[in-house]
Length: 504
Image 1 (cartoon, one colour):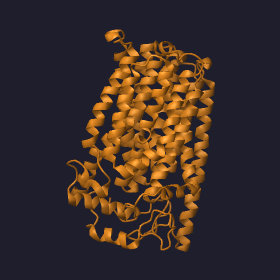
Image 2 (tube, helix red, strand yellow):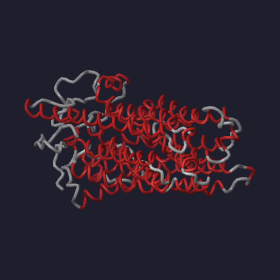
Image 3 (cartoon, one colour):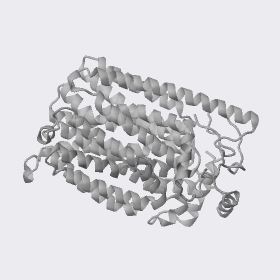
Image 4 (cartoon, helix red, strand yellow):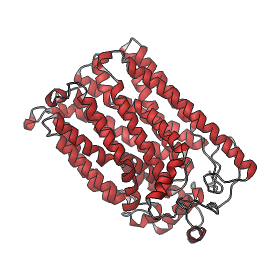
């Protein structure tokens, strides 16, 4: 496929666009646009864009994929791995050992982590840009590891709550920061598959973690520690090692790729920078000012994207934290079997996320893929909630898990493709992740053990949330379609960037 500059990402309205992206002549003084002179200087200093399908283009893309997508998947997995450890520990003696089995204390330990994460999301995402990915991701990963390690030695539920607050703060910038970083390295038409690579690594680590938790639980009594404590101790130690490796493995932003350890040559870095500048015109970094970030809160579509993540994470948090509980209490499996059987649905999820993301990038569509995944999830929860056969209900877990993992990549690409500007993309990534966390708070309460084995509330809330998601995607896609048509007729400018077209 030839890498045409400023390709139209709308699948219905192909349109030839200008070769170079420039910002409008009269930008808002608070906007993160750069001057025409600065932009021209950058474009003039870069070589011609390489065809992404020639030997050099493939080599560059492979290098970026292997370095960035792998470490992104591992770091993002830490959040899910934490939920996996907590859910696995919940079917051991942890709840009674710490007094978390009284009232809503276990649910509080889940959503207090999310609240802390929400509070620190925006400043932590800004820190990725200001301090640089290598320094910031190394620091917060090490902090995450130390806090997790300490969790293995808590004695009261109050101590557990304190550490959950600190853990949420440490992890706040991981997902939005990595989503933003990946969006800076790839043209829009290549992003969803790269988000899928990140999600695949995430769920593979999570699934493997469930199997490891099964083995660690059998160490109960060794060294004077219960099995659930071994889960936290081992995860904490592994995370600390990953944090150290992150300093050399993580890459910087394209314009600063020379700061990365043994990564791209100067020629390769220049080609990547040229492709990004041609695709959306926001390569040049702007000085940080809080006004340049917060001004984008006035854009309603950012909150529409954020609402989609809220609706998505109601389901994902419920599944991630409670699948072992559903398998044990609802489907009648033993504690050990529940831990083991929670892994296969996540291994399976790699297939739909990669296939649907390849399809979305290949045909340059976003909304239809999100709707398809949402319908699959609705079907999965209907089977999980209304089937009477345990095997059928377990199949529903597979279907629902694959659908929501697939939609993480799809939703991330949907928002990243439709905003332009350095600080606007930072704000959007943080806002979406904050709403994602708010969905996690809701999701932590919808699976009620008193409703076993049907879990009526979880089933109906999950189904309803995804019907709402379909409605939101339809409304946004119609808006983008009409905006593109209006731009075609009037030769106007979208997102205050000439040549930009919305993706739907």
